[in-house]
Amino acid sequence: QVQLAESGGGLVQAGGSLRISCEASRHTFSNYVLGWFRQTPGKEREFVAAISLSGGSTYYSDSVKGRFIISRDNAKNTLYLQMSSLKPDDTGVYYCAAAQELQAPLVESGYHYWGQGTQVTVSS
Image 1: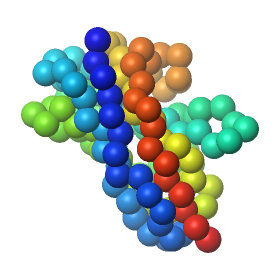
Image 2 (image 1 turned 90 degrees about the horizontal axis):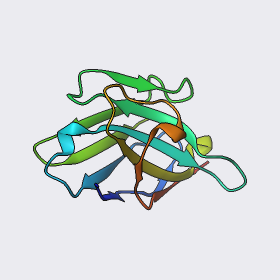
Image 3 (image 1 turned 45 degrees about the vertical axis):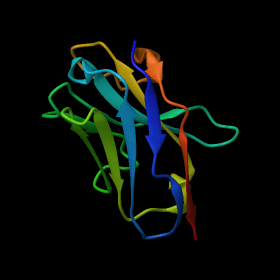
Image 4 (image 1 turned 90 degrees about the vertical axis):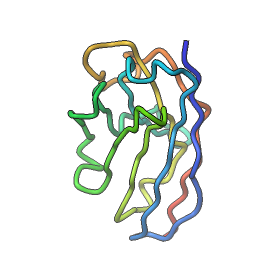
């Protein structure tokens, strides 16, 4: 079992940038594919980005493609999401997720472990 803890959320103006992180508890971090999801009040949690075991393959939702970059540092057991050109619609609680799969799922149900989330607020 892996425990995940997000950090780095905050308040940023539209057009700005922010990097959030997710630190994992296990030294076998490299055995998990990872993803970022976000949720706003009244809406279901939506897929944002995912990354393969080695970090060589990445996947993005259409709404963030070209603005966000997902990356991982297996030596530091840490997942990152670099967010640029932020919009008010990017506001939400961002969750990292992990799964022991060969390919990174692009849906919530594919992940087994979740962090508690970090709030990102983009002001207009």
